[in-house]
Structures are given as C-alpha cells and as structure tokens.
Amino acid sequence: MIPTPHINVSEQDIIAETVLMPGDPLRAKFIAETYLESPIQFNTIRNMFGYSGTYKGKKLSVMGSGMGMPSIGIYSYELIHFYGVKNIIRIGSCGALQKNIKIRDIIIGMSASTTSNFASQYNLPGTYAPTASWSLMKKAVAIADSKGIETKVGNVLSADVFYDEDTDSWRKWANMGVLAIEMEAAALYMNASRAGVNALGIFTVSDSFTSHEVTTAEERQNSFTSMMEIALECALD
Ligand code: ADE
Image (cartoon, rainbow, N blue to C red; front, side):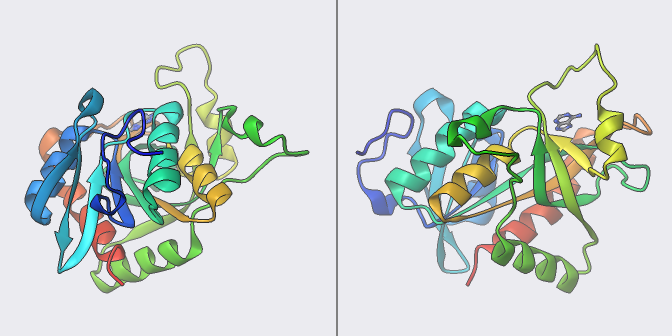
C-alpha cells in the first residue's frame, strides 16, 4: 500500500534498502547534500525530508525520523513494511550517564532499555530486550576501529521524557550500566526485530548528566562528522 500516509513515494525502488535516519529532517538534507551523489528528495510530508542518492556508487537513502518513539515508530514501520527497507541506521545525539563518557564521544547502542510502552503491542509474557542488529553493529565497530575513532558500545536508554524534572531516575539507569539517554532506538530496534530486518543506533554525546557539560553547535558538527562516516561506510557492502 504505497504511497503511505507519511511518505509520499509511489515507486518502491526510489527508497534504498539502507536508510540513515537522523532525528532532524534538516540534518537529513545536510547529509544528502554533503555526502550523496545525485541526491533526489523523495519526501516532504510534514517536512520530514527524505532523500535518495548514491554513496561511493551504492544506492543509499537518508530521512528524518522526528523525535521520540511514536515518530520513529511510524517512519521506520512504513519504510520497512511498504518500501522494502532492510537496514536502518539511526544517527543521533544522546546525554551521557556515566562519568567516563565525555561530550563528543561516540556511542553504539548494542541494546536499548526504555521507559516507553512500545513493546506492549506484542503481548509478550515478559520483558523484551530491544537489541541492535549484530551484523550492522559488528561492521560499525570495525569501521570505527579502522578509522581510529573510539566508540563506547553498550546499553542506551530510550526515554519518553526529555524534561524529567520531578525524578532523578537517570541515576538508577546509570547504576545499571546504561551509557546514555536518547529517545528513539528502542522503538526502531523493536520494529526491525519484529520484521526480521536490521537496525542500529549510533550516537554522539551532546550533553552529560554527570558533568552538566553541553556541546556547542560547532562541536556537535565536528563530532557528527565522525558518526556520519561510520554510518555511511556501514551502508556499503
Ligand atoms: N538527546 C540528547 N541529549 C538527550 C538527553 N539529555 N535526554 C534525552 N535525549 C537526548
């Protein structure tokens, strides 16, 4: 059933099998214009821009996911189920929960704990552990290593609340070894697992719960470049 309610594309092969998903649609535009050869814009509905082009000769798409699990849940579902997408790599920012993780560090989300009820739709008789695709994660770590980019690999928290001012709950997640907070990976991992396709989240630390440091726009841009390089190379065979 295409076009879908949120992606106005009538031919399936306009969207590549691999899609990079930043939260911000303008970042998708920037990535397409900076890294893709011959990019074409395929989506403008709700300004959730999506582009397809090639990277080093391989077809690749990039599309914004919006913020939060309902938003990435909708876009990733439509991409996977109606446009035949097989690999989704989220590239985003996160807030560090551990003292040894500094702003601008790069985190690879092996798994994603969550405060959301997204998993309730599956009626599971227990607690599900949303997990990244091993093949994508192995590739991302190898690419980062080969480029001399240090990464921290582990569990992230996909939270439903950004301004959590009435609790100090981040400390409890930190005590469980969770590396950082973001807001989308768990839903992406669940959608991908349920459909038997691959997903991975790669994050740049933009702020820290322990040091209260935040990145400047310029710092975010530079560290973003390293994260992008890992994600782009990951999309190659
Ligand atoms: N993304 C970047 N920083 C974040 C934070 N502190 N909480 C949730 N998501 C984030």
